[in-house]
Image (tube, rainbow, N blue to C red; front, side, top):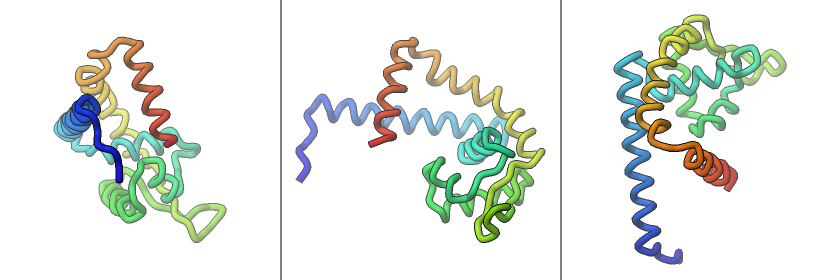
Length: 146
């Protein structure tokens, strides 16, 4: 059985959970209000924009965004219907599928980025100094590997 958290550990854990949920909710709400995109839409568009030839295998995209295979299938299908991405067979393996960024998707990302960046700055970046940001970066890089 796991050892109980100390009072201090529990307080920090709750602060982390509550603040991260509040931050995510604000980012989601403001992005959707300004652009009609969800955070998942935005992260898919960013991942595809950064990828070679603007395309990623569906399984790799799911792993990168920490989504289940069924969730990424649903997400991409929704985005296909809106013209933001398309699905294509993998050129080197006809059995696999890739998500491919469309011109409309790239335009949507470019239009959404300034508003999203403003919310990220107002809600997070501007409240921290460089040292605090560095600590956060190190901690979450380590947790990602755990």
